[in-house]
Image (cartoon, rainbow, N blue to C red; front, side, top):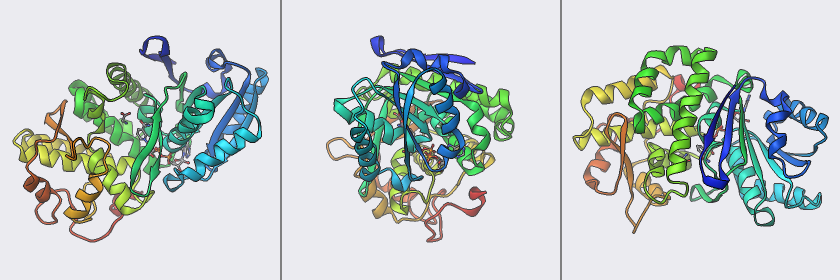
Length: 378
Ligand code: NAD
Ligand code: GLY
């Protein structure tokens, strides 16, 4: 097992990464303020892992309530949030009750938001069970739900007391979901860790084959990157944390525009990253060879290489709801070079129009299909 730390002064917390952690109460118990917890999960993850976690906790004398939400991005809504709050109130959960989010990023975000708002904020533990959640969403305290007008527009910063990434849970993760997580891993290399990008280029095939040592290294290096950024800019005020949003301005527009759940988050981030890379290339920042390397990584990871053709106007309309918009201007995370990202609003609108126009943009689909390409759906 490997332990990393998110350094936030008194609010610092560990990230434990390793196999079979759900069976080991010693990692969770020190972080419970009292021996009661609410496990929030969904109809897919619950049947796989709740009984193990509940068994581990009950043997240690911890009483648990389980709240099971419907599965899917389409359920990252006020309705799900209400269900958690209603059940917790009905069971008289208290300020020292801990919410344990057991699932992927959707469960982590919505359960985290419930913990942030219940009785003005109660303790939270993240137990991520997707690759994406283990390398990204469980770390850093961003919680929230979607709105019909845009992704994650309602939420709060609420740091967990612990992140427990049990890598054994990835054994049951479907291939398409695994690929989606790889998009966020590639992101860290692109925005701030060139040696990791080169490592990924060398080890991507082993990673896609889920070679245990390679997978563990990729998760650890990703979490270490994320922890450093969060420690530097917890509330996304200095611009450092915003760089984690490479591909997300376009990606969130894809997810909202196609309908929540049609594109997986990581798939939309992959296509959005290619659009951002194309824009960076047209600004003269990225060389043609750099663009080719990013495209090759996405291809080898089985991720979509073409964003859906929503039309430039619809993209711009959706991106106008992005949380990074400042003084009405869309701010893009672009790549000055491989391993170095930059947040900027200084982008010629004509270039944005070009990359989003079929036949002109290299990574925009020529067809009118809204879903990701079939080869990325295996
Ligand atoms: P997800 O939570 O929908 O999980 C993907 C699918 O895998 C679901 O069907 C889920 O039930 C299933 N699943 C989860 N664990 C499993 C397991 N071990 N075995 C079998 N099936 C399993 O999606 P995700 O990719 O984990 O997360 C995407 C969400 O995370 C998006 O809503 C995105 O906005 C959010 N996100 C948040 C942050 C953040 O910082 N808070 C960062 C990145 C992404
Ligand atoms: N996933 C982006 C962030 O946590 O800031």
